[in-house]
Length: 334
Length: 290
Image (tube, rainbow over all chains, first blue to last red; front, top):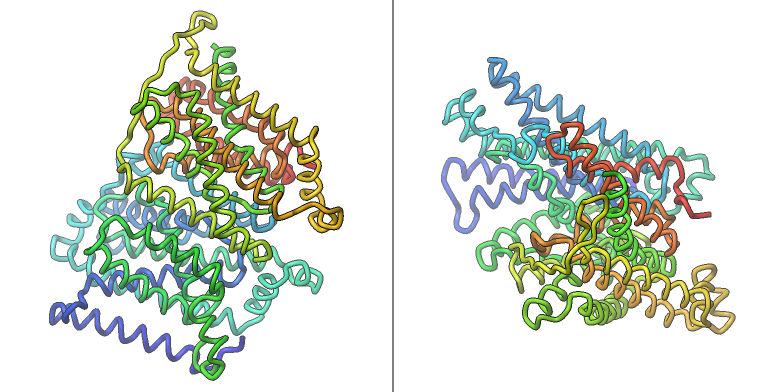
C-alpha cells in the first residue's frame, strides 16, 4: 500500500494523546480509572507490537524467539549501568553505554540467526528461532554470564548513581517516555519501509517468495534487514523497560510470554498494517491491566483462545478486517 | 565411565525419539509443525503422576490411558482448528498449535498449580562397570523401541500405512486413488499426539524431582532439534536422532563438569540447541532426509 499523510497522522496523534495523558497524570495523579501504570502498559504493548510487526507483519515469518532480543536489551542496559558504576563513571555514561551495548548485541544476534536461519523457509526458521532463544538462556545460566541464574541486580547501582529520587524518576516517567519513544521510532520505521522499495520487496516475499526471487528480489537480504530492524527495536524496548526491573533473571528476561504477546498484538491488530499494533496494543494492554485485578493468573488462558479464534475467523486482524469491509476508511487507516 | 554414559544416553534417547515421532508424523502428513508439542508430553506426565499417586497404577501401564488421552486431544486439535487451516498459510498453523499448547499449560496450571509434583518409582538396578543403572530406566527404552517397531510395521506393512505414505508423497494423487485424505489426516494427528503423550508417561520417571505445567518447553525444543537432525517428516529418522541427542546430552554433562563449567547442565542444553544451527547450515534436509 502507498501511504498518504493521513495514514501516518492518525497513529501519531494517538501517540501524542497517550504520551500527553501520561505526562498529565505525572502532575495531577490518576484520572478516574486511567492511571500512570495503565498508560505505561499501553505504551509497552504498542511498542512491542509495532516493533514485532516489522518482521512478522511484513515478511509473514514467525520469530518464536523474539524475546531473546528483549532480553538482550535488558541485559545490555543493565550490564552497561553496572559497568559504569563499577568503573566509578557518572550514570549517564552507563545509560549511553547500555544503549550502545543493546544495539550491538541485538544487531549481532539478528545477523547470526538471520544469516543462518533466514536462508530457510517458514517452518525451519520457526524451529531455529525457538532453539536460539532457549539456547541463549541456557548459555547465560551455563556460563554464569551477568550473574547467571542468580540474576543481575541493577536497582542498587542505579540508586548509587542517580540517588533514590533520580532512580524513581528513571523507573517511572523517564522509562515511560523512552518506551513511547521506541514505539514512535518503530512506527516511523514501519511507515518508511511501507513506502519504499524495501517495503515492496518485503510484501512480495510475504505474498509469494518464489515469485519474488524469480523477479530478482534478493529475498534473504530483505528478510535479514527486516529481522534486524525489528530485533534492534525489540532490544531498545527491553533496554527502556529494564529500569523498572530491580534484578534481571534469565528465566524472566527470556520468558516466552513476551513472544506470545508480540504475536497476539500483531495478529489481533492486523499483520503488516500501520495502525494495527496501536489498536491491539490499547485493547490488549487495557484488557490485561483490568483482568489482572479481576482474574489474576488467567490472562494467558484467556488470550490463547482469542488468538486461535482470530487466526481461524479473521486472519487479517481488526485493522485488516476494517479495511476489507469498510473500503472508505482506507484513505485514513493503513 | 564412558560406556555408562553412552548406555544411559541411548536409554534416554530412545524415549526422546518416541517423543519426537509424533511431531514428525504430523509434519510429514499435514506439513504442520506442532509448536505446542511439549505441552502434550506434559499432559502425559501428569496422567502418569495422578494414576500412580492416586490409584498406585504401575507407571508403565499408565502409558495406555496417556495414549488414549492423547488420541482424544489430537482429534480435538484436528476438528477444532487444523481441519479449517489445511489451505491457510504456514503462519496460521504455527500460531494455532502454539495457542493450543498454551491452553493446555495454563489449564494444567489452573487445575494442578505450578508447583513441582514428583514421585519415585524404583525397581532396583543393574551395574555397568560398578555404576548402578536403575531398571526403571531400562523398561521405558524397551517399551519405546517396541512402539516404534509397531509404528514401522503399520506404516510399511499395512494398507493403512501405504495410504499414509501415499498422502505424504502426494495428497492430490492419493485422493485420485481413492484415499480418504481427511481421514488419514485425522488419524495421523490423533496418533501423533497419542504417541507424544505416551512418551510423556515414560519420561515422567526421569523427573523424580517433579514436573510442573511448563516442563514441556524443554521437550518441545529437544523434539525440534531431533526432528531437524533426523529430517523433518521422517519418523524413523526421528528415532535415530533421538538416540544421538540422548548420547550427546548424557556424555556432555560430565565433560563440562570435568572442564569446570559453572553450570554443566545449562551448557549441555545450550550445546543441543546450537546443534540445530549447525545442522541447518550443513544439512537442512536432516541426516536421513533426501
